[in-house]
Each structure stands twice: as structure tokens, then as C-alpha cells.
Length: 192
Image (cartoon, rainbow, N blue to C red; front, side, top):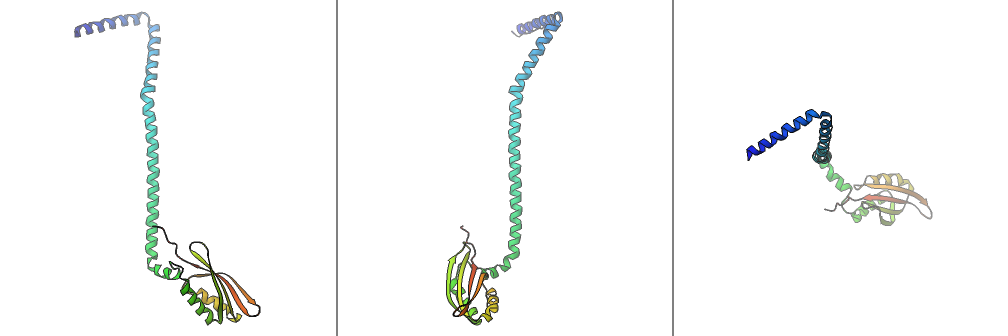
């Protein structure tokens, strides 16, 4: 059987060689056309999937590079913030006495009344309203001598708790006094 196929192939080989030698132009066009068709088929079914796969892998690789760079940036930022935290860690106790975790208005009012009386003022009205989550707005109306106003403001600013004086209005109606609009702050509580 092997001999049969070998003879058949040799017979076809010799016939085609003779035909190519007799009509070279005809066969060159045919083989050129056949070669072009084979190349097109190879390009469509062989190269196109490979090229598409390479493009997808390149996009995936670029995405991974972006994620890696983002992670490196976040890690660097986190390391820098950790260093900053370690640098200020000894001072956090001071911050916690200046800006409390809770409003603690009773103790603040007691300190405030002491400062006011030291400077010759009496607190008539003290009202509170909520500002943002971290701030409390206080309206304070006091009577007293205006000569102690400068030292009153200075002593309010020197309180342990940070106090922002938003406005101060001196008045001199039936009695003299001052109206203050103050802000005190609390530390923001993160939800864990």
C-alpha cells in the first residue's frame, strides 16, 4: 500500500512538472493566486487571533502597571503620614486638652465664667447652637466695665480649650457690656 501511494505521488509530481514546464504563465498566476489565498486565510485564522490576544494582554498589563503605580503612591503616602503621626504623637495629649472628644460645655462654661469675673464681667446669657459636626457656636451676653474688654479677650484666647472669637460687640444701653459670638471645637469621631 505504501508503494501504491509512493507511485501515485511520483506520477502526479512528474505530470505537474511537465504541465508547469509547458504552460509556465498559466501556472504562475494560479500558484500566485493560491499563495495569496493561503496567506489571507492564514492571516485571518492564524495571525488575527494572535494579534487580538496580544492587544488584550497589553491592555491588561497596562492596567496592572496603573494599579501597581497607584498602590506604590498610596503606600508612599501612607508611610509619609505614619512618619508625620509619629512626629506629632508626643503632642497629641496637648491637642486633646485643647480640642476635646465631646462638647463638655459645663466645664468650659465654668472656666469661661471665672475668666469673665476676673475681668469684671458677669455672664447674663449663654446659648449654644450646633455648627458643623466638629464645632459648637456659643452666643454669650455679659455685663461689665468696658475697660476690662481687652484683657477679657486676651484671657478667653488663653483658655485651655481653643476658642475662636467670631465677633465681639460692645454696647452701652442701660448697662454696659459685651456680646460675643464664639466657636469651640470637638474632635471628629470616625465611624469604625
